[in-house]
Amino acid sequence: MSERIANCMTRRHKGLTCLSLPDFPVWHGFFARTGGRSTEPYHSFNTAWLTEDDQASANRETLFRTMGIDHQPIRILNPCHGERIVFMEDAEWQTQKRDVLIRTDAAFTHTPGTYLIFSTADCIPGLITDASASFAGLVHLGWRNVVDDFTEKVIASLGTRYHQSPSSLRVAIGPMIGACCYVFTEPEQADDPFWKPFLRKQGEGQYAIDLASAFKAQLMGCGVLREHILEAGICTGCRNDLFFSCYKEGYRSGRFPVLMGLKLQM
Image 1 (cartoon, helix red, strand yellow):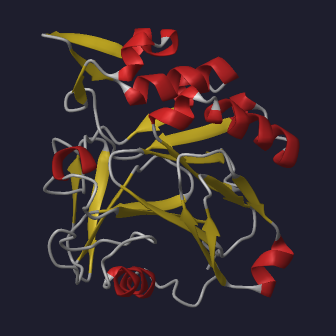
Image 2 (spheres, one colour):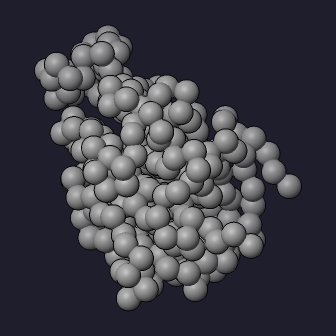
Image 3 (cartoon, helix red, strand yellow):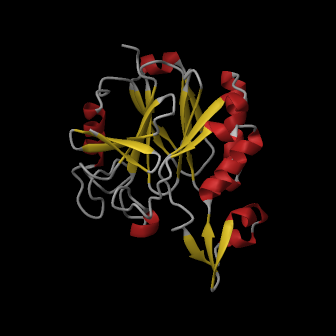
């Protein structure tokens, strides 16, 4: 049984709710906040690596087991709004099947049967591959590493390491905070020329910040084709019932998992 929410198809797996973009060529899932063990303020499917929630690890294992990848090689990204990019090689997967990539905001794999995961709330979850699904990559962006040109660094590194031209890339943007909810009074972005096209005045010194449009503009500025960018179209603030939102709940809240991998052909 499946249903459509915005641009995503929704499926339920033994209590977990997984949303995905049907036209994206690599297996992936954005998992809702329900179906886990965590109690308030992390209720209930919090999978963050750094957290005071003692059930987060059990929730991650539930996710891996439910999706049938608990015995597959997995890397857990611990993002920090920085610039570290990791390219996993075949030998590294064979040496250590499960590991954490500390302070890493982008990771890529071209090894079949391997998976990447990070947990987020409001920030941009970007998924990147090509038309033939020859590799899979996760990218985590908040407004700080957006303005620090992290997008350009990721696209350039894909050209260097995987010999991918920007026009060959396929990008998906998962559930994230939308300009409809991401509103601040006199934000520091208001004085930054970069953000001017992506700020909407709301009156009384308030501005709505359009993170998604800033990311898409950077992608297209690098040469990624607009028709190759897919969006979930789900605001984590509007759908706080489905996804965690730091903006709505405060920093001490849960983080929902974004999972992506190169499934083995059966």
